[in-house]
Amino acid sequence: MSALTVSHDPEHNWDDLVRFREEMEWPEGSKVEIIEGIITASPSPATRHNLIADRLQRRLYSVIPDDWGIFQTLSIAVPSRLGMFIPDLVVAPVALCDQAENHVPASLAELVVEITSKSNARHDRISKPAAYAAAGIPLYLLIDRWAPEGATATLYGDPKDDVYRPLSTAKFGEPIKLPAPFDLVIDTSEFPAD
Image (cartoon, rainbow, N blue to C red; front, side):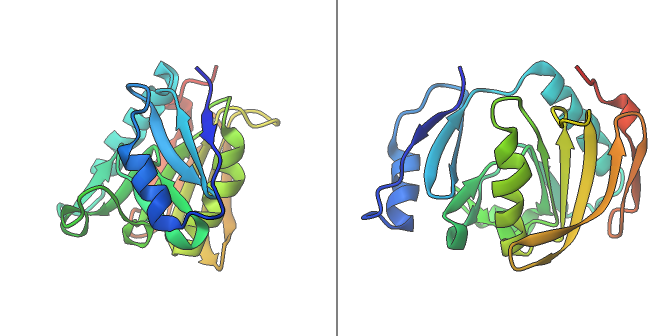
């Protein structure tokens, strides 16, 4: 299954979009997001995608404080960008996430990670980082298995308005370092590259 989209009716507001996303019956196992006011249902990620998420999550758990969590299905909201996203990984304080029922403000995240899928890599490269930067998320790690120049990991930071500054890029096989508060070197040679 490829991504399914439901266009946004300009007559509807943010609350209508969220209600529609939450009340509709979507295909089982799909990832339902609102991207630039359009509701998108994507299939479950492929096995290699999940392997990368697992390896990153294991490394991150070794350096985060005990009161932070790493979430794979947490919905984060950026209403100003008409966005409700489910990043592949979200690192955020558990207490702040514990107060929410269906989603949390994206601004609570310390780090988001997206791992591209072939069918929707554009969202991870363009739409989502603009929304994450607008929300003020300090770090965005893009694992781009489908980059035109070959599989890469790019770390973005210093968000201003809806733009991140690229901090570093590594081709698969090279290390990439996450700065404080993580201070973690990630060995991308552990990632399956297709």
